[in-house]
Length: 202
View 1 (tube, rainbow, N blue to C red):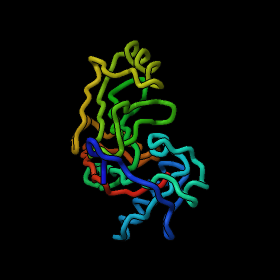
View 2: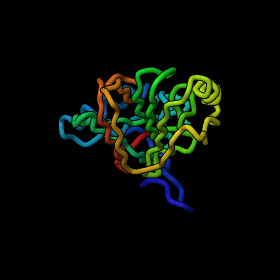
View 3: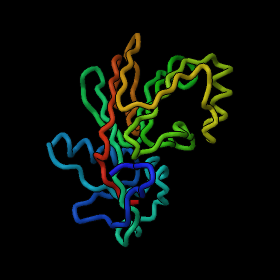
């Protein structure tokens, strides 16, 4: 069960038989997509790295996965890219470039690499954290310097929202990254959260 005010989130547990150890968000997404494409239940994921692991306080210690770590139910992002369905565990980024043009970021985890792009994001709250901006270069560089600490928000030029679903469109197709992996180009992007869809051990 996801987070609820006044209640503990998750408990202790170990990776069960049939669980899948993943060392990155891209590996986690691949395991999710493979199961969904086959119409199977999602496997329990043992997080040995990646931004979702870091957000959940994981150290990447694989021994904890077998010996007993934190067992948590997390949200999962689903997205239609021009009508093609995909899933992501940590984040979605749609942009031509970090330096010019519009940048759309949808965070389930707080981190993307060394950047704290979703300082309010929590993988168990039933919401996705959205940032949408097209800043002038000087403002973009100033915000960029604040990304590691997550102090780029609030910003008057960055539209933010915390929602269970969201839709956006671009004038022309842009590259989309899901959990750091290319997922093609799209003009219409529709995301929604699948609450408590994913079980992980960290």
